[in-house]
Image (cartoon, rainbow, N blue to C red; front, side, top):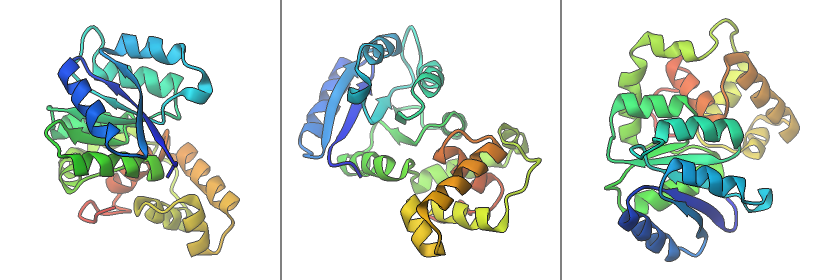
Length: 225
């Protein structure tokens, strides 16, 4: 986890932005570096921000105009692939959660979440790239029951035994170094396996790998990651 986690807030409700900013200001290792009232404004802010000053995580609302959260996430994943995204929304439904995670979102937190859950999600996403609650697991289970959802991934190539072992550890939130230590491999070897897995199955990031593991029963949704 970074010593200070720099986050951006994107929401069209001014009071909500102020509230989250105030909440985060009470946490020493979390700093709100950018805020925006809609997707277009946020993209303009990012394009004017030096690369070294880009946020680590963006907390994004879904319902915004003129650009909603779905469209914004697609653009962010294309233009800023290293930016991790947490969705903050009142629309906490299985199809929304499933679609957002398929796009590469790292976490989905309801707007009525308490401070502890929000901070935990930010810390987990910063350190591991993903955060799922038990409710997310249940919603993803329903989402994945529809086999057509699996078509987002390439099913033609099977993962090797070693790749499956590494993927299971990734689902348990182990870092590359921790996976390497556990399997007596070098960190570079683990990084190579991770990259090949993403290329094999068509995943864009760690979230995609985890969802693939869920979809193919490599890591059961009943377990907490």
